[in-house]
Image (tube, rainbow, N blue to C red):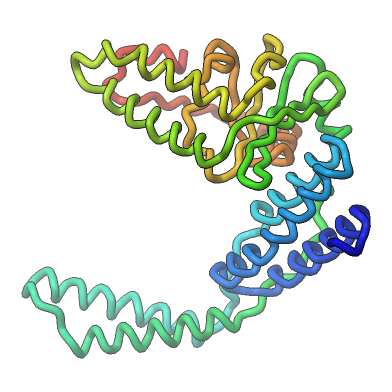
Length: 301
């Protein structure tokens, strides 16, 4: 990195992630795919740092989406028609059921059954780890222009990228991408834990007095996660694309997001695919409401 240009660094990272994508798609076990995917984290972080230094917000958005695509878009592994593997899995289920029944009925494990169960586990694991996956697919490359056209003038998409422990807000909408610097990820995670604890306490009778404390914590969380971007969200719907470590944040508690249509997506590409997917013809809709809510079902009417 020190000897090369930012452009060279980005090209090397792109090639590295492409090779990683091809490699992990040849693996037939989900465990191996997950391990291979983790190898790309350093490349993705390096590319995002180079984008931050030498490129504009659009380039940082592209690389943020490139890493999310690596993590999210791999199709599930499918076991091949391997008679030995299928036979072993059938035998394992039978032995496991017998061992569980023995523990339930007699209260004590049966050593012979447990030994056979462990042997079958080792055999199945060995065969699974040596399976090959399907051929890699190219997939669709993320297009910032297409995203901005789909958002139009009324919708804002907020993608959060974490670089060197700090949250960077990429605000997309009105035909452009802007970057704002927010707080530290570690502080945001701690504040999110406090907010969740406060929300759990509010579920108990007589806890209404704690509501101002929870709302104040939501305001602090907004400062850490959105920073100055909160003042530029407009009045329309907002789509939030957080990193994995922030998916549990109660986004609707943030003051800037409280009184608007709000969606949370794992990536901008996922949101685009969902928006462009036509519903099945003649399909039925299912609305689900939680039990025992004071709203009486108003949230689905």
